[in-house]
Length: 343
Ligand SMILES: Nc1ncnc2c1ncn2[C@@H]1O[C@H](COP(=O)(O)OP(=O)(O)OP(=O)(O)O)[C@@H](O)[C@H]1O
Image 1: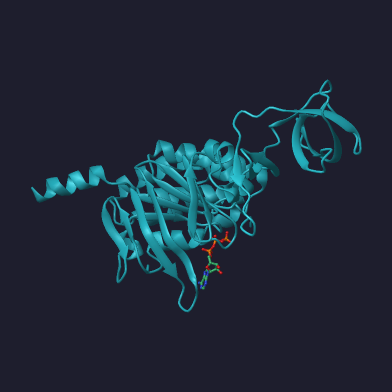
Image 2: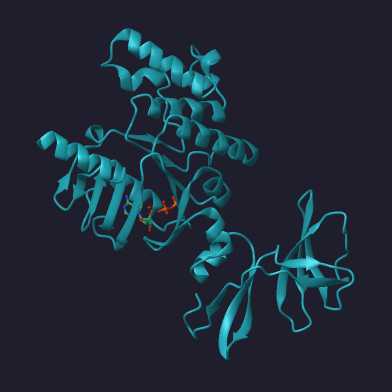
């Protein structure tokens, strides 16, 4: 009976639930205060935010590396952190992938991957190592040492090592920030596919929104130790809940406007401002950035306001030229203009 109740609790509960978490480093100010989030089984979540907003600190609390103040952290319904109670990191079944790979230099790729499986019988261990090396595309490098691998290959091994013991949660702390942009984009997509294939619940931390968008089912934009908006990438971009989210996610400008007599800021994304030679509304080209398929133009309107416009790159206009524009706004996003509160 007790076991049945336990099973029902596990089935009903989230894989990870953080509620009302507060945390301060000894002698320091609060890093998190009233921080909450929940991840369902198999969901990939991401904390996205500027440097110093507390992303890594939240991961450290979830991993059991820091004792928490107020609030609770639960893994599949079991409280692993609350004030005065911290389940040790090695008892949480939480895997971690770090920015700097942290591989064992004296162990081969396969020994690194098998490190967390030392208690298992040799055959089962070998089978699991093989399965993971296949999943991350490293089977042909099984006997190499870390110093013989590229950055991307090292991070694949680190991922395989973290996944090998089937953690109930995987934490990834800026996993691709040491890699070049192209590889970063490719690996984010690959790693998401691997996590989904292994049905792993994961929480990623990054300040790179492309990485967040490529990998996560839901993204929490953090500011000063709290989540401002927990949402899909699409909604964060098109329906930002606060001015901070609008500023932090994607490109765009906030232009002053008036709605029903109220002073507001209206968000204009570069894809809201279209270039149209026939349009009577003209704007001056102040800056242009070539992006391959498109130019990102910074344009000055007649009232002095500046907007961005994404234009197919065969429309190659000179700085200082006046070009026709029109707005194509599907959904107006506006925030109240409050004196002194627009930081
Ligand atoms: N060991 C520590 N002792 C005292 N303060 C710390 C410690 N580690 C971090 N902090 C402080 O806590 C705050 C949050 O840091 P944290 O590393 O969690 O931010 P972050 O969002 O992960 O930043 P980044 O993107 O730069 O890694 C910062 O103000 C930082 O200075």
